[in-house]
Image (cartoon, rainbow, N blue to C red; front, side, top):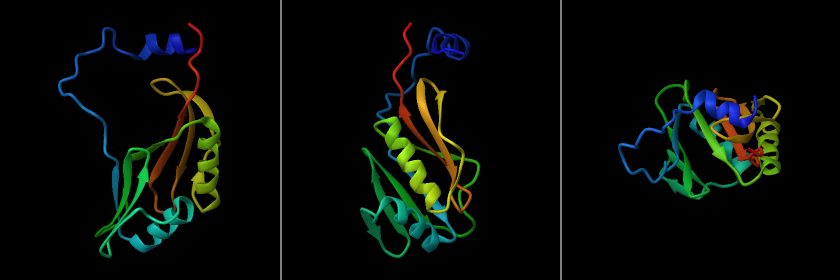
Length: 142
């Protein structure tokens, strides 16, 4: 399916008016029972956290937002996906490979239509959290 066919199949036309004036989402906060192990895993790929608060909060700058790990009472996040957006497809592949090398279970990167053409790199971290890395691809000619 090309991008035009994809848009015609899945996008509402005309687009509904937004009910609120959003500026974005300011990151993700993930609660882990195995907090120290989760921090060690993410630090092995992303480097040291940019923010440390007490014994149970670690955050990394992700673009203009934050990825925050918090000490949790039980388990780790499930039934949700964290999406990380990078500048280009090569960077998406490089970050995906680093997470897989650190112990995540990943699927091979691919080019997909996900609201628009993107490089799609998914993995599940060792704690069961699904993460998706994307980078915009050039739009196909209309």
